[in-house]
Length: 300
Image (tube, rainbow, N blue to C red; front, side, top):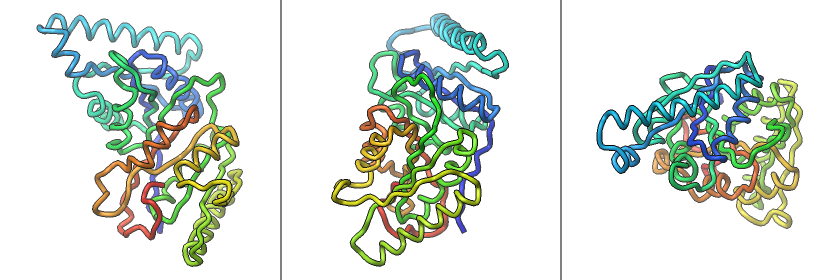
């Protein structure tokens, strides 16, 4: 029996460093909050390094917190001007950004973290490495956003499936998003020359199709041929998403095997998050199933 994650619909957390990249995430969070009737939490973390290098006493720190709070309130006011019924909370924290983000997410029973990523500098501390660390350690899904979209909907969702048991945990989230956004799920799997592996792939594909059919979710299935998609599933997922102009890719970010259970599977996960030119990526850390994975990369 699949141990799948059940979304709770509490708060959507948006870490902000006031860069354009981080602000892009707000638009996606607004769309999601409206559909799921969720509150939005706008969070800025004053990093330990900034406090040590710029400020020496409590009054200066208090002044900085006040200024940051004012900037967050401005973003909140802009949102409420457009969406008066939206629930928005502003939060200022101190510490290591990725740790503070995950702590706030836990304390507020957040459902999802939506944040920007795209190598920024200076005060733009949430993009790049912080996003990677949040994805690695978060217990809830993280949606990594790059470009601002005029219509931030998830109409086309790419769902790569491999042979791991944890891979199937994405299906619950795919169903939930698809029902709200009226999305079409694009299930992709790689062809395998091994006959036994191919049988397992087709069995997993049929299982996914059955769940989507039962929940009245639109879907299309595609087995990727090596002639057109010769690379690993990471690169092939990006290629396919770009070909269909996808709005979201959904991936798993941890292996179930004991030796990798605490590691972020960087070679594939970072490839998806960092190499995708515009498509947002929803990263889900798997819950234990109590069994060793049956094969595949341990990533999807």
